[in-house]
Image (cartoon, rainbow, N blue to C red):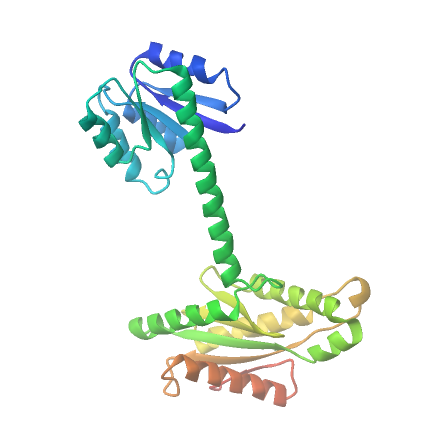
Amino acid sequence: MSHAILIIDDTSSVRQQILDTLRGTDLFSAYFEAGNGLEGLKIMLNEKIDIVLCDVEMPGMDGFKFLTMVNAREDLQDIPVLLLTSHEAMESKVKGLEQGASDYVTKPFSPEELLARVKVHLKIKALQDDLRANNQLLQKLAHTDPLTELHNRRHMMETLEAEFDRSNRVASPFALLMIDLDHFKQVNDNYGHQLGDKVLQSIAWEIKGSLRQYDSAARFGGEEFALLLPETTLKGANLVAERLRQSINDIEFAGPLSGLKMTVSIGIATIPSDKVRSVSDLIRLADDALSAAKHNGRNRVESSTPA
């Protein structure tokens, strides 16, 4: 097992009793000890802890204050905390549970009961971690084109709406680039769809390499891609587009695709513009510019407003 446990108790003999109980199992590979809540909190901030056993009554930061501090941090909230209490009073137990404790163990404790409760909460945490990871994966899949690993069209539209609103609200420039692979049908006809997919992945890789931290890119559909460039004027968008056009033209394919040369046509639309009142207007202008690039010979960049 690769689990780690933190034991917080101001009495060293109690900590040792817990350690002796747990070390007789294969539940943990790492054990951490603290004499009060503050020491325990520092350990949690520096180590990957899977479960905590914490005494209620301690000098300095007691168990209740410790729970308050743990629950104030989002990165610690999912770690189960089992309170150790010598109090039989129901009020004390209820208070601990209401403040975020996962469970409690009454001292003096039975080793069998302690082990049983620890095992239960380790299992619950493992299930919660799996669920969280699966949810994150599902969220990624919902936003990502599986072939290119760029954003998909749906997520691109959501991002575009948000960036369009932000740009108008703060009066900042914004550019949309629509990119289309030239003569891509011939690639599929001559090399097959599997190698055609390899070409799309290579193009997507070049597009990713052109992005700044706050830019985003999407596969808009088929062999068409979109770049969203916040805080970017028409001049800046043209520079990005020309660099990208050249880098794609310079791709050297290997294997069965050796000798293949790919080019792209790129259309640019920007705001602010008196022609743009909505996201639909922006997309239409970028599409019109892309059509102009196709009409004027391909492997070129055109914009809705002359640069």
